[in-house]
Length: 168
Ligand SMILES: [Zn+2]
Image 1 (spheres, helix red, strand yellow):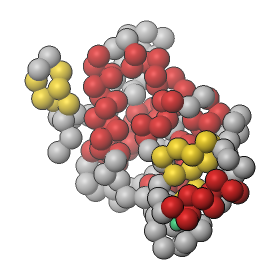
Image 2 (cartoon, rainbow, N blue to C red):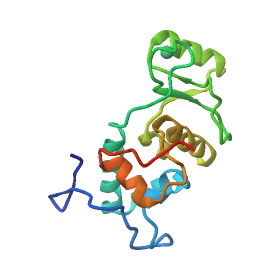
Image 3 (cartoon, helix red, strand yellow):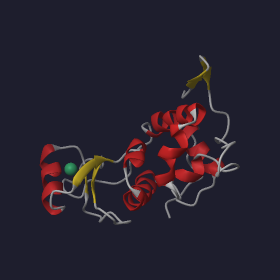
């Protein structure tokens, strides 16, 4: 169960997170994850509700299974990627599981690029293009359609039934 605290009350999200103020009024926080990740940090910075909801999304996302095998050992699932500056695409071999050998390989092939976790929480520390690259990788890793709408994304994160989605 994923709940978050608002005004000292535990809230279980019951639907997608509507943005009620500012330039993105009427959008949902879910809409930003895979299409405008570079906006998330400024959205949540001055809004406690959005920030709490973001943390609920992050903790829910940490429970989602990753489907991509490590290209180096082909035994474990990937956990890390090499971030390429100003690129919207992460090459297929710029990802690795958490094993020391595989991470060393990743550092070698990526020319010592920055190695970061394949996590939703990583999105908000990235610049625009790198964020888009990670969004696309997360969709592939989780098997969710990048163009899913806010209700589909909400269900994917907070409900156990993930059967609606397909990678694409
Ligand atoms: Zn590996």
